[in-house]
Length: 224
Ligand code: ATP
Image (tube, rainbow, N blue to C red; front, top):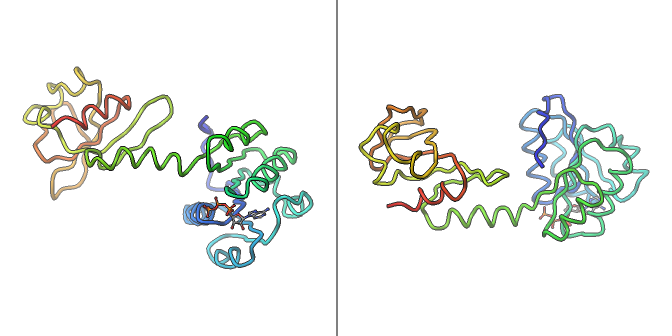
């Protein structure tokens, strides 16, 4: 389920586990202007991020007292970015639930771990490798240049304009009436992206940003 509350820049976020996933997440949040506390049991991991984050601490996140001392329940959002260490992932998440962390995101390596984390009270579970595998599957065919799938089977994709869409203003092309996709933006070779309107005439070689149901977007991307 998506978090519908838009976080303010003043939101304080704790990232527990500074492996590849956690460290890149924590750095990105800090770059975005958020106050970020990064925690890891490994002092080298903490040291390597200390300059990039607002705060960084060496601690065992399965130790309730350590979490209390770091005021973890006061953080607006907590991310458990521990994956392979299943025991630590489960214990940390359940401690955060018990301590009353308001919004908990947890990373899982597979669906089974994801289900457990959800059951013990994580509000959001992400499966980065599983999700990235699905995303890359859409890209490897070369038809889709980029692809984002949202919940309830809705997607936005970047693709080369199919021949069928060329030469006609979008208002008259069959992309929407036949395939049910909306062209949101368009990029001509050598130019930047612009919004598409009903009058926009698509040319061969144009790059389109399409929005619509995943299967519909895939169908259009598969057209010659
Ligand atoms: P990656 O994000 O690199 O793919 P991963 O999914 O393999 O990581 P782990 O290696 O299990 O996950 O953990 C990620 C990080 O979490 C590591 O840096 C590890 O030191 C840290 N970590 C694991 N257990 C704990 C714990 N109990 N307390 C604090 N940090 C921990």
